[in-house]
Each structure stands twice: as structure tokens, then as C-alpha cells.
Image (cartoon, rainbow, N blue to C red; front, side):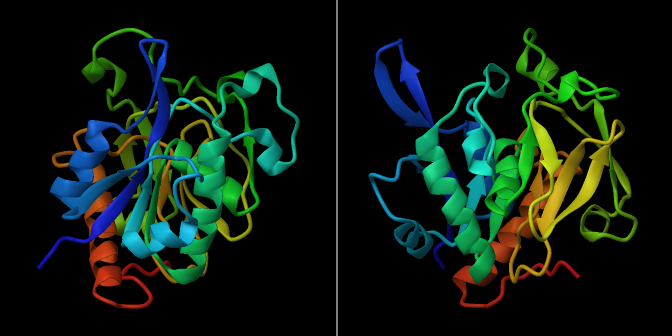
Length: 258
């Protein structure tokens, strides 16, 4: 039986300062293929190439990974400032309507870092441009120097709602993760349930209340060593189960949020 296809949203890059390209992290493909048991398909984030409907017909589920750009603040009613960083309006034009359609139909989605923020904005929420500038908050950004192992070091504790979706999935109320983001949730979107927090109160895990399918999203990077990490593996396994259920014609998808 053919593996279901999981679309992984790509990011735009300029190679050698002159050649435009779309690319995605190898770790995301490895996690989808080796842990979720699906076939990864990198999707160029540009609405000129396809429609949301075509994407949903082609793929059984979607991963919205991290990336250099941020959601443009106009998407949540704020003016652009230098603190908001870089943007990719083409990615906004694909991810936000795609998330809303998948939430409505129950087609599985997994948001990671920027993808976590996109799910919140797609549902009407807003973002802080820089978490580390808020009183009492820590610096959640990736260290600028060091090896990949040092940058993705597991150093952040996340606490889940007692008995909540993530607590049940992980089998623990507190877990250790990495922390590699600058922005974060200011206001939660409609039906967004924040289900996990860093020690400084920063939202780190969410799902969409009442959605018929898998909508779990996290602010950290579970694709790092997903096959062996005790926190990452169950997340990608549960996503894979939901994707296979969708591909097999089950409606809604496998994981419930109640």
C-alpha cells in the first residue's frame, strides 16, 4: 500500500545572493518519512503555482515548519515595524488559507515554530514581535554560534495542562524541549487552546478546539532527532496515524481533542 503524501511547506531562499530557490529542512523530511511513515513532498510557498484546493487533493496532511520569515503583522491587524523582522507574503498567502481549510475539513496539520504562529494567526490570533523584550520573559532564540547539536540542545521545560491533549499524548505533564524562536503568541485565535507553556509563561503547544482532525502545533522544533527523542517521536507518530486515517477515507481523522 502506498504511503500517504504529507506536504511540507518550503521557504524561499536566495542562493549565492542571486539564484532564487525554494527549499526545506532535511530533518522535517526525515521525521515525516521515518517516524510518521508518510512520503514527504516539499511545497514551494507561492500561490502562483497551485491553489489550496489542489494542495488538499494532492496531500493527506501538511507540516508547516519553521523558517526565517515571520507572518506579516498586517495579517493580524498591526503595522509593520523593524522588530517584526523578515516576511514572505507568498508563504502567508498559502499557509493561512490552507490552515483554515484543513481545520474546517479535518485534514491533519502539524505546525512547528513559524507554523505554530501561522496556526494562531490563521484562526484570528496575534503575535509578539520579540519575546525576549517582554518583562519576565527569557530569550527563546537559537544561539547564534555553535554546532547544530549545541543550537538544538534540549534546554527548555514545557508544562502541559494536567490531563490535556499533550499530557495524554506525551504521558507526562512536563517535558524538556529545545527553544529556537523569537516571536510568540500575544492573543490566542478563536478556538485556539494553548495547552503547554515554557517556565516564563510563553505558549509552546496548542490545538484548535472542536476541529474534527489533528491540529497539534508546537513552538519548539520536534524534527530534531525525531526518531529518538521521547517528546518528538510521539508527536510525529500521532500525526502519522491521523494522516493514514485521512488517506484511508476516515472522516474525521484519528486524534480527538476531547
